[in-house]
Image (tube, rainbow, N blue to C red; front, side):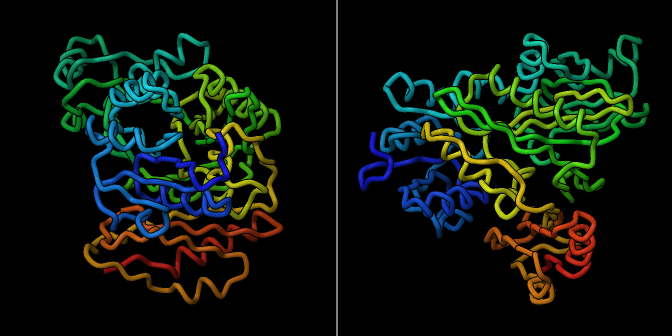
Length: 383
């Protein structure tokens, strides 16, 4: 298969901001990148080679789209995996492989996979409904506090309920779910690992995530993470072990908990480019998006070394604003050295909606943090 040719087509299920940034990376190599999503007004619509309007959750839409491309990948997990299995039978190359994706799509199967493969994770139980959980608490079978996660469909903080008190039981999610111990967390980390079909594995340095307490979204990301070198090594080893266990090609973002006693636990994984890797565009020798392309196309993986310390700030829609978007303070921010805004191109802002991100690089991490605070103060997403 000749990748750098007029005949080669790379397909992506999903046309959001990750699809947009994948298309931007592919354009550097003149790779023809096709996108399937519901509207060409989505972020990737203006930058991909070909945009096909359809629903990546619908069997027939995925099947017809997949038959038009040579290699198929995803930018979101909630795609029709049944169609991917059929396409795989027909000889289409698919990354992540459908067998692994089907496990990752279900947080219950994902947790069982971690346990069965000796990957350290928090203790958990599986439940059929919120009412069953409520009854188990009443019967003394389940003790507070805990975290409940919907087995399917959760995304960007949705599908998660933190239950600390009896009053919090009103927040229980209704369907099949995972209940996990509420881990005492010192820091939340992430490591993005990459693998190609030839078996080469590389991992990016661990990053430290700081969450917005209201939206449960990553608000800040620090690279490198401010952790002991032994913890850094353990985190990278776990990420490599996890992508090897899944036998994935492309990227696997591995979210981790660091406990106060130094234990590193696998929280969740995503087999695609991830919010925790955006800083690699400016901060590393190879971006996560180029690395994903290298992995799924069986090319040599790129260097993951850091060029400069970086801070990534998510641009979230301001509370109280919904409507056509306006970015206040943009000019003030781009006047600062080392500040790189990425505007996703979503036409409508909503409270806490991801509208873009800003990467700040500096020779010193403290300097990058200081600039990032200025960006947070100045750059506002309003309507």
